[in-house]
Amino acid sequence: MRDLTDEAAAIAKELGGVTLLRDHGGGFSPLTVQLHRISAENHAGDPRAALDAARAISLKALPSVERRSRALGDIAVTYDRLGRRSDCVRTLLAAERCAPQETHARPATKALISSLLVSGPTSTELRGLAERSGVLA
Image (tube, rainbow, N blue to C red; front, side):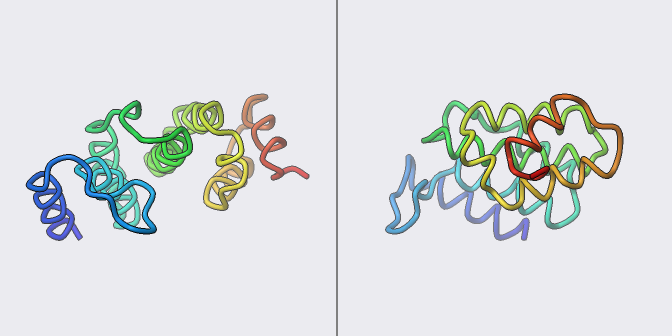
């Protein structure tokens, strides 16, 4: 995965800028490769590498608030896997501020919120997010 992602990053850099792809909202760029790296490192079981990948991007550079929200959701997963519960909740709340509908509707985010509710102490903020996301319905 890392070799292929590194190869994709090199191709994206060589192409320069964003290469628009049909049926793909963000196109192909170094930024979209880096976003993929966050998710891939999480799925590969290396949340520290995912966090390093997240630190290498600027959320403001993302093309839409929905994409920022989704990236923040992936970063929240990273914090959860690192056992950084308060950072996870804070990041989920930031995702919600960016794009509430995206955050409330995304199945992976709802699953993370549900997991947080049963895995440790809850806060008013977490319970509120769970309610707004329909997790406590």
